[in-house]
Image 1: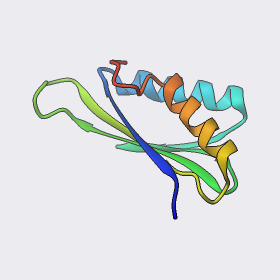
Image 2 (image 1 turned 60 degrees about the vertical axis):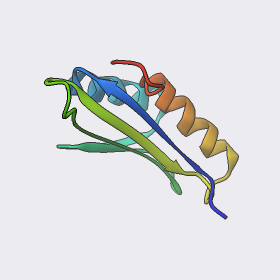
Image 3 (image 1 turned 135 degrees about the horizontal axis):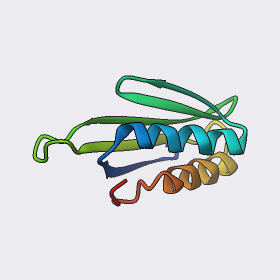
Image 4 (image 1 turned 45 degrees about the vertical axis):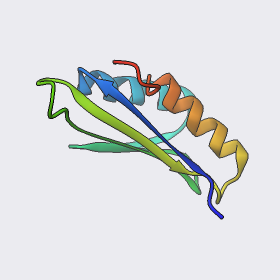
Length: 96
């Protein structure tokens, strides 16, 4: 059995999303790596929050963002931390 989550949201400014993620990761002491269409936030040695984005096909200039984490390997503490981080990024169906 595997436990995890998937959250989606919208974003108008990917660079702002990246800046916010870097700031939040720094505050929490998490590692982060960013590339052209996504980023990983390293919450603990066995736990990664994966965030990806792609251009919104229906609205020019907007982005569809998705965050996911399989939290089974590290347990409920990772699940809670990953959800809180994703929520702080604004990925509850809100626009960033």
